[in-house]
Amino acid sequence: MTTAGLILLTVGIWACIGALIAVPFLTFGIDRIDEDADGAYIFRPLLIPGVIVIWPLVLWRWAILARGKEAWAPRYAPRRDRHKWFGYALPIILILTIGTGLSLRQSWPDDIAPERLSEAGG
Image 1 (cartoon, rainbow, N blue to C red):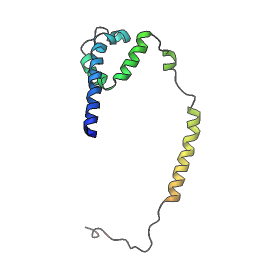
Image 2 (cartoon, one colour):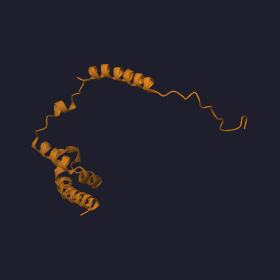
Image 3 (cartoon, helix red, strand yellow):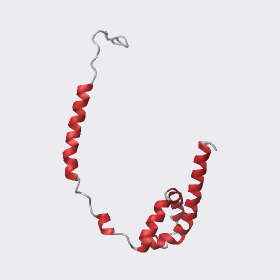
Image 4 (tube, one colour):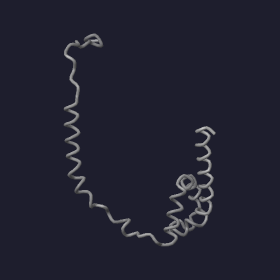
């Protein structure tokens, strides 16, 4: 089997598994994990391509949310503990980048005369 054939087979298997997961998830699973989706049946066909592509993530989130084991409070808490370090690191990186660029730049050869590309006043 060629590499292209193997890639197509893998993509086909991935899509088949995703389609098999999309049917039960969009039929009754989404109602259990998202209360806003209860009774909203018109938008569900729009989710089919996304579920087919990211079906492992859908299964994982479905399992966590269906059991109620998600710790939602830390999920929505802002992560600001690293902002101070990035605030110090980014100016230093910027100065080092500009300094390196200026020190490594090439100078124009002095022995080559410039050429005019078009006639003056034309």
